Amino acid sequence: FRTWHADYVSILGYVSLHLCLAIALNATITRRLMDEVLASEEKFAKAFHLAPYARCIARQSDGRLVEVNQGFSQIFGYGRDEALGLGLGALLFCPLSGDQGETALDRLASLGGGMGLEVSARRKSGQRLVGRLSCDRLAIHGEACVLACLSDDTEESRLKASLQELATRDSLTGLANRRLFYERFGIERLHAERERSRMAVVSLDLDHFKAVNDELGHGAGDAVLQEAARRLTA
Image 1 (cartoon, rainbow, N blue to C red):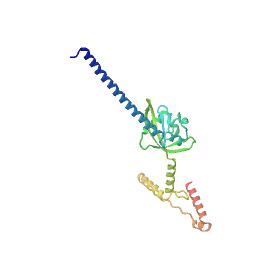
Image 2: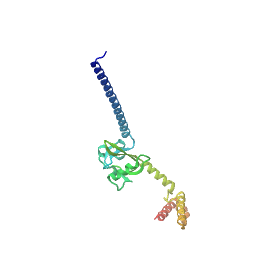
Image 3: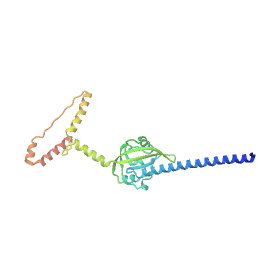
């Protein structure tokens, strides 16, 4: 036999127990979510600051930098305090030359991740560097920002250009070698066929060049070839 008071106390205890369980479950879930958010932020911060290439975050509204990593300081030469507030578009020569503010940032943000775009940038010293730029949009405290990553490929670009020069140019005169000649000839031949026009191949010979080599030496012969090349290119 149960009285009305016993039923009341039992129901109140049952509801209180469920309420406590719900609060405990909600607190557990909230804490777990907060731990996951903090862990994600910590991973992002480590990946951002320890990256060997330049990483920076700029506001999309005005293009001002709000955060840079150590790689940015090493590549561009700006300390963190010096870099904050600089315009990201002002550091890049192309493909953003002539763009300012939001226009430049919109173009950057539209690049997305992927392989990036080759650009030329300016160091603090005024020297230019060549790198590959990748960007993506992100929101920080509700404000639209752009995360930009830039690798310093200056030496690789210089080496690539040097190898290209060695592969297509004569090292003594700087004139196109046979390989480049055939490449250009093929292009011009297709162009002539498409336009139904004629083209000519001109051959030049230096008179008495052998006598120069025999009487004055190969050094003099090289000088003659270099001067002839200079006049041809002029």
